[in-house]
Length: 307
Ligand code: CP
Ligand code: NVA
Image (cartoon, rainbow, N blue to C red; front, side, top):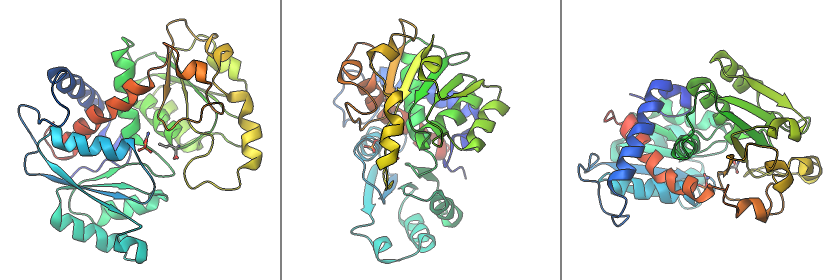
């Protein structure tokens, strides 16, 4: 039974299949109301449990709409109102939800918790974000890049700011889908070397630099994310260190004229990105947000053996 804790659980061929399926399903329902089920309703009768130990707008809404479009339904639990918040174990929660639902999505802090959930669940478990990675986001990001007419192999993607969970999944994707990543971060905020090694092992060229201009020069895709991820504290020194990595008009002008700007959202305008870049024609952040729906559908179909 497949889990989707990280992109390598699926591998490059399955990710390519997900991206094709997402494009086909998206195209087939362009003008339809968003809650109407796809013609084949492949997950009719299926229930996804979503468990949130951190806030969410896009992940929560897109999985809900994804399940409706696939013909299924969702139930939503959070730590504030479930027994998880009163100390019931992840193991018991996994076993209970496995008896009631066909798949489980968990958004949590420590990645070990989702591994424990997967260990004890008898249905597929999907990573809806941990402190270590955010694989669902990156399926939507790759879909958005492809929609812009950019093939993934050989693509030059540049990341600016914090070496965080989203960057980790981008690096993992780079090794699997054969694109290159330039990472510009301040010293001390580099990504986990494990993800850099994964990308390089897959044949991706990874540049780690403190020089934002070097990373931006000639890039196809410019990406950033919040400088302060959920759960991070004592960040006073971090904000000052991040300032040279803001994505602004001067920085994006160094990329290719055809370059596109991605941000998983929520954005902090005036910190990691300026209003001008965020609202510019190069910004595809709301396509990216919508694509969370189409990506989730393919992830759900893959874990449930229907892709
Ligand atoms: N990008 C993303 O995961 O957004 P949410 O935190 O709103 O789910
Ligand atoms: N890096 C961010 C992503 C939010 C979707 C966080 O973990 O808070």
